[in-house]
Length: 315
Ligand SMILES: Nc1ncnc2c1ncn2[C@@H]1O[C@H](COP(=O)(O)OP(=O)(O)OP(=O)(O)O)[C@@H](O)[C@H]1O
Ligand SMILES: [Mg+2]
Image 1 (tube, rainbow, N blue to C red):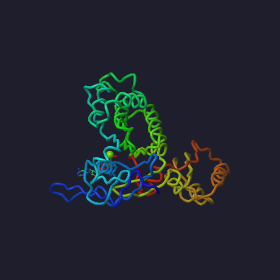
Image 2: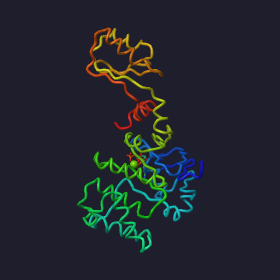
Image 3: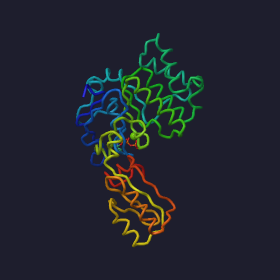
Image 4: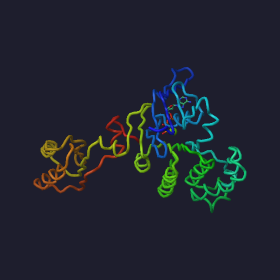
């Protein structure tokens, strides 16, 4: 790979805890993130996503390993790292008593955006997140989704080459989420790198060019959405009253790998190859079974996660 935008080498994070054994939040995580793409770090609650983000922006010091952003070492060159990095933390920390424009102005001054460029930059980022018309309203009067959008605008104010978004659409409604997704895609189209954490598998699937799945501080899978889903096979969902004999017959059909669930809701995992769906239809027909629902499903990232861990991503 050309120089990665973000690189983690044997990152390890152990938190001391009073009167208890230390807690290992990240065991040993190595990850190279290519520039100019949206990278999705997907994992359930407590898997270590925010811990990774916090270490990358220098909020916590790694217990072990090396972290770098555009080749700059996060521990030794933090000041330089801060200049190329824009972060939207999981908890939006905006000043509610100030307007959006005032929040941005304050941030621009704090991060030393040159005076001559401030106005222009502020106008650009407000436009990007669709808040131009509301910029003079107090942030305390914003909806949650608008606040997340403003947090994104603020992170982009310094024109960072690398943008880290920790659960950017948490608590955001479906419409605003689609709008935010579009804006995130646009950042990558401009050649910048986005690291996005999420526990919405639809979000990773929709946005991320490359995905890493984290579970309990360990990397359990890595690849494009299609690559990851390729591992888990197609399946058929059937809603029908089936007799025990019919269940056995279905399970033994050519091309059926496994039967899960109990009637009236069952799932047949298919082996590779096509044609099995037709075989199942033919069998149901021959038995004069009319299912209340029948569908051939493509596995999604949640299925991948279940396959790898035996648990659902979001319980
Ligand atoms: N300062 C700390 N001291 C002790 N344990 C911590 C500390 N910070 C995080 N942890 C633990 O590390 C684990 C990972 O937490 P982290 O916030 O990184 O998860 P996450 O993947 O971001 O989860 P979520 O989806 O809920 O945001 C959790 O078990 C958490 O309790
Ligand atoms: Mg988190």
